[in-house]
Amino acid sequence: MKKLAMAITGALLIALSGCASQGKTEDIDAAAATTAIEAAEAALNKARSVDGEWRDARKVFLKKAKAAAHKADFKTAIKLANMAKFQGEMGYEQAIEQKDAGPWLF
Image (cartoon, rainbow, N blue to C red; front, side):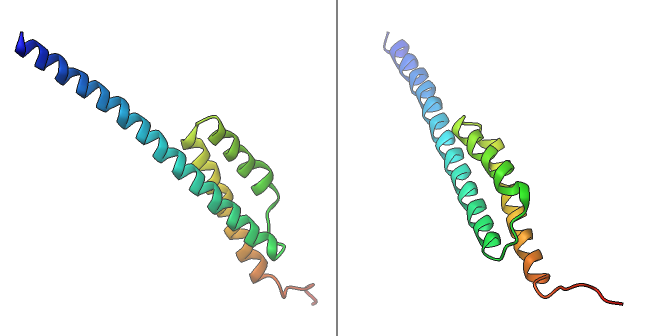
């Protein structure tokens, strides 16, 4: 009887630890998605400060990333936020590189 009780207790501990780790993983994913979205917003704001924000970065990618995070689809949210961040960084670089560009005269 004592062995049976120990076996049941062990099985319950294993089952409960699996449930607890699943919640922690979801929390980590949520935190990663939030961090990615914040980084994307910062990159897009930096690009906007020099008039280099690309058209779809905020309206499409960041908006969809926030919607995916709200639906707890953190993998998609991170992917979309990283795309928005990339476009923000590239928009900033493009604006800085081309700030002195003018019409090309023969």
